[in-house]
Each structure stands twice: as C-alpha cells, then as structure tokens.
Length: 220
Length: 81
Image (cartoon, rainbow over all chains, first blue to last red; front, side):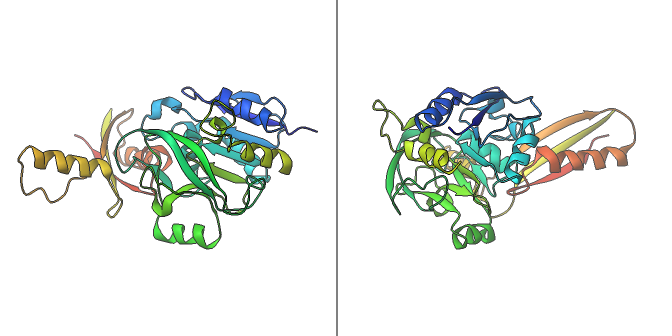
C-alpha cells in the first residue's frame, strides 16, 4: 500500500505543493494538506513540514510556527516513531519545536542564497536508503537563515552518533561542520535546509531529490 | 498596567553575522575603535494588572516559551515605572 503522508501548511508556507508532488513521484499516496490550527493528524506514515516563510519569519524563523496547535500532534507522531521530514523553513520549525537540536541562524554571508549546492549523503537510514554510501548529490537551496549552529557538545554528539544526514560539499551559509541536515536520536525525524522536493523533475537542477522520497516510501 | 521591556541578545561566543556587518559599516563610515558590535532585539510588553512580581514571573515564562531561543540567546527583563 502506498505511503500515507500529511504536509503541514502554515500561513506563509510556499512549497507545500512541491512537497506533495515529490511525495507522489516517490511512490507515496497523495498527501493530506493539514492547516496549522488543526490539533489532530490523519493516520499517516510521514509528516512533512515544507519550505516557506511561516508567519513571515517574524521573531525568529520558525519560532511562531513551532508553537502552532498542530505541532503538538506532530510531536506525538514523532514520539510514536512516525517519520517527520522538515525542509528549509520546516527544518527551522523542527529546531524551534526542539524536535531537533541546534538552531538555524542568519547566513554567514548575510545574503539570501538561492542556488544549486552539492550535498553528500552521510547517513544511511530510512530517509536515504536509496542512495549509495557517501553519494554526492545536487539539491537547490533558497534561504536566508540556514547557518546551522549548536553548542560544541551537541555538535560532537551529532557527529559521534552519525546523526549528520546531509553535509554540504560547498557550504553556502557558514553552517558548523558543513551540516546541511540532521536526524534526531531515533532517526525518525530529519531536517535539512536544501530542497530535495525541488530536485525531482527534468526541469530542476537535478533529480537527485527523488531518492529521499523513494527512501521514505520504501521504509514506511 | 505594567510595562515590561525584554531585551534578547545572543549568548557570548555565538557568531553574529549581523553584528559583524554593523562593525564593518561603522568602520567604513569612519567610526574607529569599535571593537565589537552585537545585534539583539527589544520587545516591549504592556501587561494587565499591577502585581509586579507576578508580571516578572509571567514574562520569564514568555521568554522561555517563545521570546528567546535559549539555545543561542539570553534575555533580560526590565519592568518600567
């Protein structure tokens, strides 16, 4: 049976349709789009938090979205071992919700970066099982606040536990350790700044992102 | 009514690219001797009631819950007269 999923929509999300399309291209069923004020989720394998600028990035990117009613249900889904994928603004929301450690700060170069980046797939697992070990892929990035930061102890733990899932080969934002994406301890919650959902079609910079959605659909 | 001012600043040691840009801009304007600039934010709150201790406790809770990301930020609360 095809993977069931939900894509959360906040005021200011703008990649929810791209996310939904990538999930379907990866072999999943058409996702439910779930508005941020909902307090329950349909029964799904995957919850995806899409890119965009939820609540205008006011206060801090992802800060207000992370306190949305729906995030209680997302956290409960994560506690049950369900898959959660946050891309770009979705990654920022996951860190603000403390479902992933660290924080995404203003890019070191201060400019909004919108380009293709080379990313290495570092961690085998349910989100990346379709990739070869240490495979180098091309994903686009489009963000102003993608500079991953955490205290030294957290960074050491992420590295030591193999929780860096994606690493930039050409760091666009100054992220510590060239970190592009990380997983939680259980490995069922992943956030990354690059957009695999925008690397799934012949008109995109690559189709390398399909592997993420095929991997999750295969693991679900 | 009680007015409170919350000042949120980056913890020492946390890289502040915006502060660096301010340093550079000040230097380019000819202001020498600025060893460091750090950028933060100020949030002014108007709170119902007159109990200042209760207000401070409440604002602390607000800081922990939303106003500051204590992973990288710290906060200072000042109650205004």
